[in-house]
Length: 230
Image 1: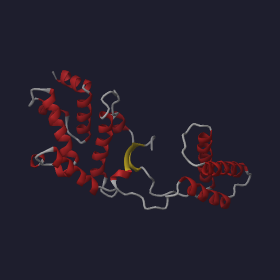
Image 2: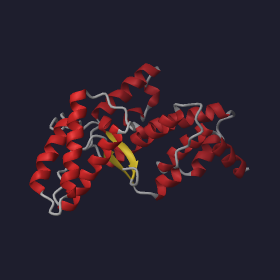
Image 3: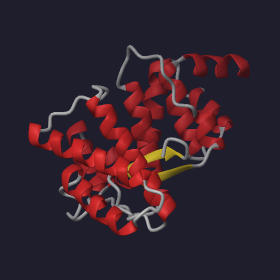
Image 4: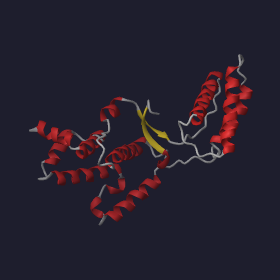
């Protein structure tokens, strides 16, 4: 009987993700089996799981009975999300970001993709900034060469049509000149770090003109990634 229950949960894509999330939040399989026994239909069980997911993710929803409709629930969730920053701590951020990854998959009913909970458990996943907090000027010559090689490859891909770029003709001309200068600098027997710094600043001015702006510290600039993707 237990095998058939687990088999049903696995084959139902929504149940698979809801239960997978709750297991990641340290709910035991036995407690979820007990919970399922309280409901006669799969739909009612699924609704109970959704409720449990939200209660575990958002502190303001720990007493969901206090909210009269979905509008109030939405407002409460938005207000809590607005308060979350990169300083809120892993224990608060990780459930929200994990739920976001799962909800993104479930948002497409035509997709058969599933979140890989086994990789989430075994691989090194962490909370990362989408837009980097620091540009990270490469200090060593080896890192400078690697950084410049990546720039050359990127510009070459754009010029070959691998990327669709909406920059002006002037910007395309500037990027072409930068690529040529970068190739020359990389080809020199003695790599000149002073010349690299000048070229580095020109590259940032062209490709990241807003790089000096204050970085968004909100949860909107955070994502949950495995190490290899990061």
